[in-house]
Image (cartoon, rainbow, N blue to C red; front, side, top):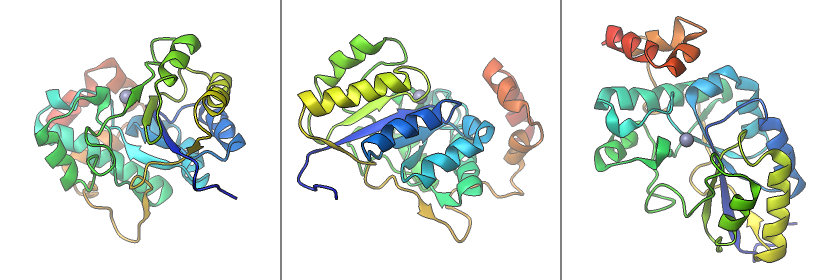
Length: 241
Ligand SMILES: [Zn+2]
């Protein structure tokens, strides 16, 4: 039974889901830990079973855009479409409506916050900056550096990691062991307000099937790889407009 007096830490994993997501989920299960996964729509489309696994094992999911471009650099309609398309993908895959988001690279501004709100997404409810308290920079550095960052964790902190890159799953297990031994006797919870709702109707801000912008999402199963190369998304979106 959960000891509710233990201080909480909110682990978050960005950019998934990916092939190694199940290993991360297994590690989290060892401590009955819940986390929040800020997913990329294109990756979720490529790994729908992984997305289903995240939700079915009790973790929260948030919106991390469709293709992980800097949304502050995009025209508003394109930025909004990045969020709405990811909303729709998650709703169609797991039948849940996401409630929170994290902008790629943590880059945000007031206009984006307003746009996200029109898609039913908030990042103001759980942390004032909508970002994180402790950035492990695990996408760039290895275990020892991540450990040095975790030394700064305090109760209530949101910790940024990246599932599927660094640390690898066994590193994550070692880091959690370290946190429990050297920090407080933490419990690990999903961010309040990020657990997606079960939907019975189209989620707010979802792309309607008739929306011309859906063309770039639905016509080509290999489009995600073109998006990663940089040009297909823009040209397809331009056509849609
Ligand atoms: Zn990211």
